Length: 189
Image (cartoon, rainbow, N blue to C red; front, side, top):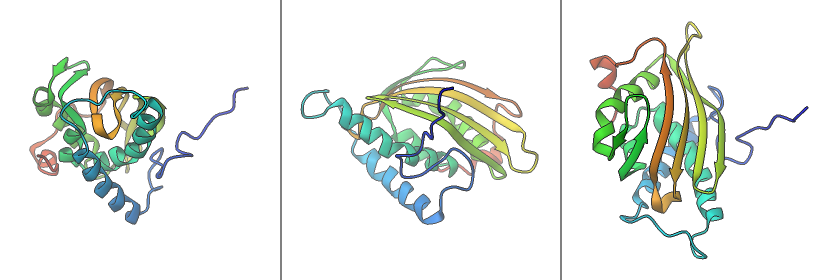
């Protein structure tokens, strides 16, 4: 039988289930996320001897927990900053081309999965160079029902390149559009 692995064993924080990340680490990850977004260059960097796939993969592993924490905190400003301006985003409501195109729809998803009383988890995350694959689930803290889940693939050229392509299958079970009150909880650009 194939041995199961802990996808978080080499990462600075574990988001596979609720309650694993201490408050001081959460604050550090948000600060790091803001700094990482500032590193994105106007033109994606070339992969070569000076900026290797190994370095890009290491940067993606450093970035990953910051993404999880930004989502848990409803930091739409950070989440939008992770994307390149020319993002291509394939999903059942898409395709979307550019960060302005997806912003109106995606804010509803962020508000629903970051709402008070739910816990967002990412039990699986895998890295290969500039590819990041993850699966997520969002559960109601009171009823334990799954309110949403998804499977996502990002093409992210490290801190300097940001995310240029995102493909996502997502399923919302309870709501598909957020209420004005939930939208008001998001921090946006």
